[in-house]
Length: 73
Image (cartoon, rainbow, N blue to C red; front, side, top):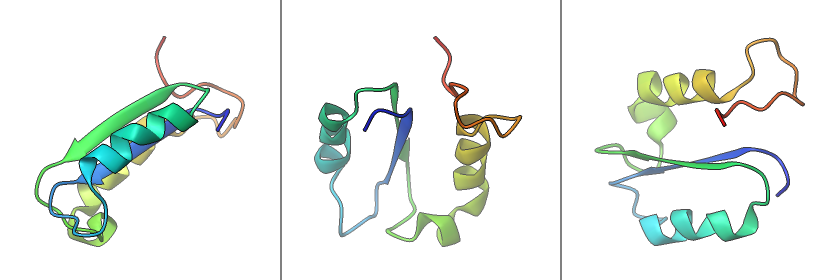
């Protein structure tokens, strides 16, 4: 993956382990950010929509320009 990427993992996900998510960084050439949500399960978008939406709003460029880097640095 060449683009900026944010990996989000939730602690109660029975289908994906934290190591699987953090190891994904090896496949990202662009900026990588990892976020851990404590509590939600596999369907974190339904179980913790406020937290997931906050991460999306931080990650996505505010002007809609897909070439803009959403991550500081």
